[in-house]
Image 1 (cartoon, rainbow, N blue to C red):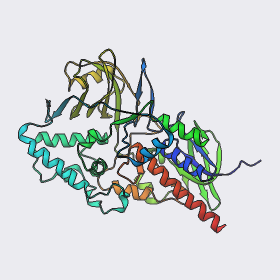
Image 2: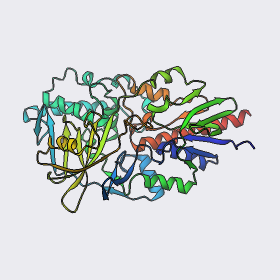
Image 3: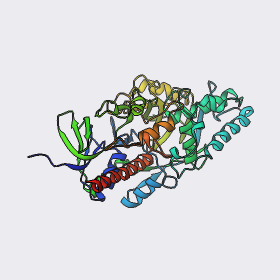
Image 4: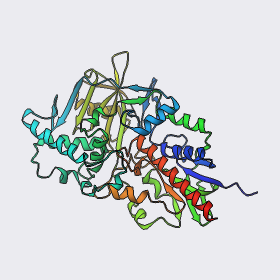
Length: 438
């Protein structure tokens, strides 16, 4: 007996894949989700802190804002999941121009700091946050950080701080990336550069997986874990998807909702469009490191930013014994071993010399073959083009994921949801067209 043909096969069980599958199922389509790993969630990942059974860590995407992010607000209201608000920082430390400081720049550079932030704000005001980025005339903002601040004659500490902000946002070498992502993010934060710290201050109680599980359970979605897709073939009659284990799934259409760094490992026939192939040929620049450090002997409710080994440290939560979990942001060069307590302590002491790191936990997204890096970070000149190219369907195959979301919330959970919704709309149009011409 031949296997039943699904209406849609969705590849990837992160937020974008689950949302696309849910929306399609609610429109009456039969859907199956294939996930290459052994869990759902994609780049969101909460679990018990290794060696600290009383603690939970969020190793991937976690911060949200119901006030700023419309998709998150809608989903939280629909499913009734709980969120918690972070406590504000009370102490800060910065490293700029090679100096540890309680304030980011010396007083003599305050006018420079104001001018740098105002340029970022003014550039962001060209962006309409409610509209797709690719439909706005913004190509001239897709430039390097160096080009963006050229001619401003910023002092060394201010220049260092600006690059540190981009490094914190991108998890990459700030001199290699497009500044466009930071400009778009500033627009999302209400055109406020300070929003990089203050804009997103909520997290899911129990982790983002709580919301995902409610989506799956409420909609009765079929998710097949440990189903790594290796081939996608399409013709005039439908799509055939093959997994590493040899399973074959037939469908009328397909949503590919996996990280763009691993898309080229899937064999497509016919081959994807030439520009897609070119843009996917190499790993993108994002090499973000996000670690959770159990720390003591640091100032209460601390925050850091700067050009140290770590780009930033943010309070995760406080423990009853006076220690705290700090969330560390860096890149693949921050620690040679992502789980090294000793290296983590050296990095934290650059900001807080008396700090003691008791334990470290992290997931190495760069080494994980299902991700090969953090969220997508583009070089100058590609940020907008990549979104335009990848959001164009290839026949019966539609692409989704926060890597290619066409909004100011690209690379956040809200962007993944937005992309999943857009993919469902495109697939629905494809299926409707197929019915009308059959």
